[in-house]
Length: 304
Image 1: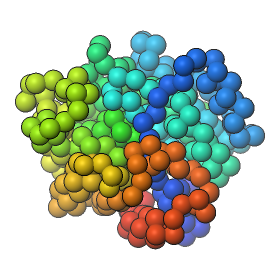
Image 2: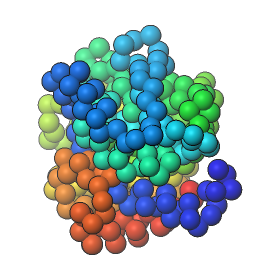
Image 3: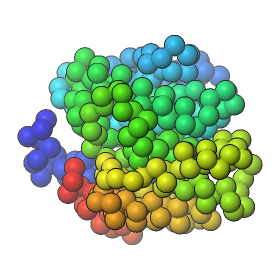
């Protein structure tokens, strides 16, 4: 796999994956059994599913693995759902459907992660959950035919904030011996600079997540936690949201100044469409979007 990663064909395949990067607020369906039945029916042929792999004692500390049969040294998409830090599920439609349909046949392993939620568990502890999940997934990767060194982290909305926090805060996972991952894809979060967010007009959901303690704002702010070069990152944002792209630009600018390969991708799509189109046939998205993605991800691909 390491040699494969150096080939133009594989880099093109990886860039094709990045070319479809678009995200949405993942919300759990009303009945878990119906979600399970739907995801099973849409699951591509030849994919082994390992459900509810535990990475901690809580019922929410679980992830699902979708691994192509006969996979060997396969790359991994490690997906973190959104939901305002308070809801969402690893089997939600926007989290899985198009991603499985597109990348499982290309040999990618997909891991979809649950984590503990508000009000019992605050964002900083949620990021710690993701670190534990990532460590568990890397340690078990070989048993699914995956390569622990070829992970791509991706999160949407609140999940994008948590992935960004994990990416910019080595201290969160310093005792877990994580292997470096290929890069992080942040899908439309407006919480890259939590301090700035909380000091301006904002939705009540951010108060529930971050409270009134200014010290906690800094602890949970990827922009403030970023003090050294991090893994490559791509920040995708909706130009239809008031603060999303400004926050993405601010994080990327700082990351680049510190020596991180980072790019912002601005899309004229709403928060939901960004995720719903992730994995769809490229013919369904505008040519201008393809060009923007290719320009962005060619740069990111140089470090991958």
